[in-house]
Length: 87
Image (cartoon, rainbow, N blue to C red; front, side, top):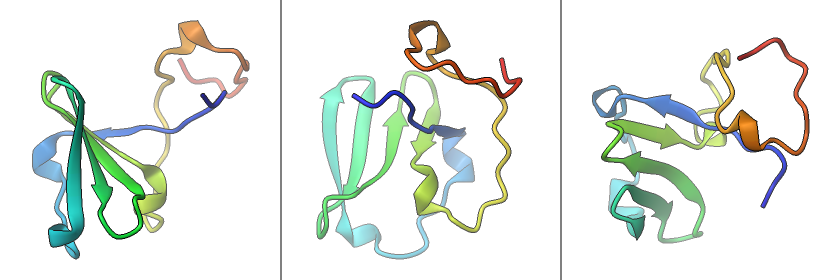
């Protein structure tokens, strides 16, 4: 496990696969988590959280995105304090 990881959560209708959709495979860790990866290199692309109605997109997949974080997730379990002013 990593002390820090990034999540960018989006509504499913705001996500569009523009290239390589035929190379995406799915792994169901739980009924709530459908992980999508590249079948060629094995790299993680996103996770479909069906019960939450959100897609968790791995940030390096969208390097051109001008994204500003808005909050921390699971901060109650933090092992490394983040002093960035976010909730």
